[in-house]
Length: 356
Length: 259
Image (cartoon, rainbow over all chains, first blue to last red; front, side, top):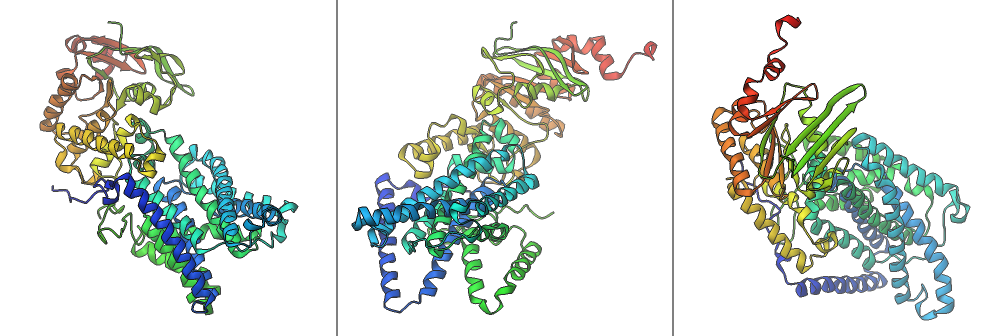
């Protein structure tokens, strides 16, 4: 028997061999590039060459990528099936909105140069709000990660689903955040720059994680918890960490969502939203960062393209999922990744087992 | 003979009304190659499970290198120096052979998760060390050519060997092998016996193994402990065990006068 030789992720990625200086330069360069793109986009929209609607779809795509890639960390990479991602998003959205609503007017009064209406002030305030939303969601991630130590599979899915519902129920009953009427008048701070930073950030983090030995421990927990523990992996810590990191970025996504919509209500974050994110991860190929990203793009753009039949979107989702399950149960990408470097080079093998 | 590496003293495990392990004493000294045998259901794997922290013993004490490890979480016990293989091989199925090995090196890593995500210089250096260490072990066990292959596509015998290699990657003082020869043909069993001796002699790792194949057990173990219904019924050299009437009775059934 000659086993099929597959390329494995252990082959060093060129970027991992770069010197620290050049990696730092790449990071700074990326941020500068995103800032320039942000400015260009704003001008193109101001000049009327791109509709505000298109920009909005673009921002929604970025938020969806952030959400799907962060859920992929929990569901795909660490293998802890979570149905509560909208709950983390809600925590981030409400925390950040409350913060900007409280801080914005004070900044405008005390430091007019950095008020939410000024470009620099808006940028800064949203950055702070994202960090706060992410941190609050990460704390919620600990709370949800803890039951995951005892539960697996379907049982964990039910607990996380319950968590999402509890968040919605709590928000519905807090008058200070508008209860069922929701929060209004959130400043429109979300821009391309911060959306891109969040999306690129979670993708880069996932990639660096999976290629490292620390990240392999996450995969090991997914594959066989007993064996992972016997090899010295602290599975408890690993699972909670997956929830914390995933929840953080979901909270960041929630902050971006709140400052894009300018109006949030508990209903926005119901169970169906969590399902949408799960669909993105599963459709893309559970565990595949590329897959989650592409599925997030497709499933955000598709309903816009299909506006005339928008009510049938959920039927389309179900139909797509059924077709996928029948024809490609491992998702579009399986567990493969695509990188710009060596286009279409496989770095991770497929999850699917050989037939038979 | 004090069990200077591992010593179980009067250890019991009770599952509800069932005493799976009953006041077991077991000793492993540095450099030992010892066996644990007994009929099916005698409690052998349960003994492994309390040594590795899968279960806490309901009574008794387990000391390893001077630490009382009874009830410790498994990953801490592994870090302290006990590694094991499983009766039903437990490789990470979708990971490559090399990735299976790398997972086992994490507990000796100094770099943090943060430095891994940020790809700090120290982390990169360490990844190279991990890679080199894992490759060295694969070479020693003759698995190097499979490095990039998915673990589950290995032939059966190689999978068993990979599991041993992976356990060794944690740098154990004591290696627990749970039925390493199960499912192997006579040729593979012969190779396995050589390998186990080599592990002890070249890696300086002490070995405690559970095995049903008497040719393997009698062939390599220097001392054997026999369990029956959770209790130790005999301890001794292979020749003594082979002729011990209690052991024969446990394996072949009760003698006729008792019915």
